[in-house]
Length: 68
Image 1 (cartoon, rainbow, N blue to C red):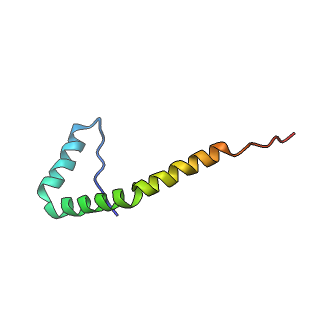
Image 2 (image 1 turned 90 degrees about the horizontal axis):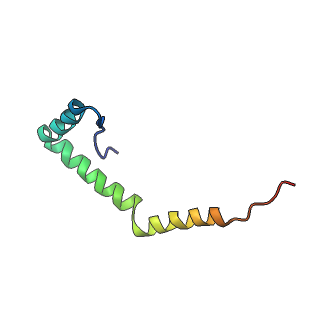
Image 3 (image 1 turned 60 degrees about the vertical axis):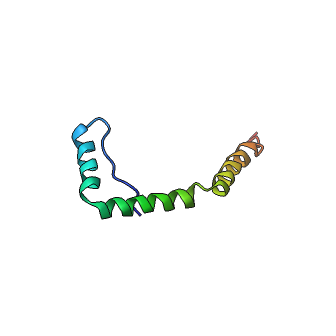
């Protein structure tokens, strides 16, 4: 699934090419836009983010056993 186009932030020509691509290819823009919405919905829902945050806390709170 493709959600966008990468452009080198230090390269104005690279960014211009990416912008031209979206301007000239409406279907590509719409497809990538829809893919981005789906990725956001599936990967960054409130439930998903809460589960990921809880997972980090669980990992941090597990007592570390000494090897000695």
